[in-house]
Image 1 (cartoon, rainbow, N blue to C red):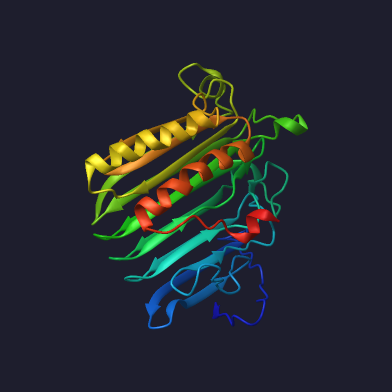
Image 2 (image 1 turned 120 degrees about the vertical axis):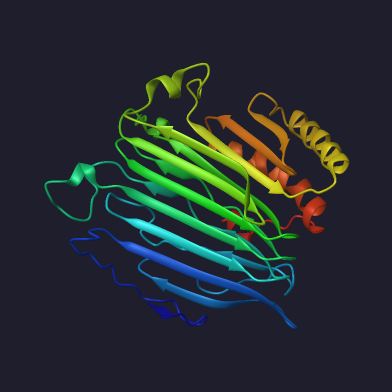
Length: 308
């Protein structure tokens, strides 16, 4: 591992061993607040996962960071880990330039008698200190048929830290007539405030999960699900008023049948269930445009890469 220069695009070397047969990619980022604004203080990577340099379309107080994974997907045997630490009073928005992918069987980077037993793993550890804020807004993750995917995101907020984040998961490639019919996908999201869990969400689809995917108490045949979490909002009255405003916005965009919004332990949680990642992201952007000024006292400023 080595520190990156912001002026250069880093090279990377994929390391494959018997104990870790796929790409074991790691990215460690620390952002702090200085007299000149938020800076990328620490940037260390191993394998094909990195950032180049922060961008400042809103001024030096808040850094926009693009997480880059050149292979564009995770095959069996690969592990990606991202550790982000936002120090006191710093502010960052992080996103990705494209969709992530968990590929299906037959795409491992190695050949052994245990190909089908290899897992594909992504772990995001996000720590936000007092007075700091993080917006975690990656594009969608595609789960190919036959994948054995594990995705975990842990958000740890100190008192007076603020967070807005979303994740989208797309099961299969229905438009290409490649539905998700086999393999398994396990996803978890946990948000802690001052060391105490406030929101825990888990999804487990095993052996294609037909009953869960198609059941009325499950995904009802839909293929795209998203979760947005924002907060904390210490004033309950203000959060209730904000929820009513958000619900009104969703109704104005004819999204009430696919988006639900609720409050939980001082957090605002939104769910999307539908069949289009682009549609779901548009719905969540409408919410983000209202959540951001309410929570961060900032006007919405979409990352430029979303327009490319």
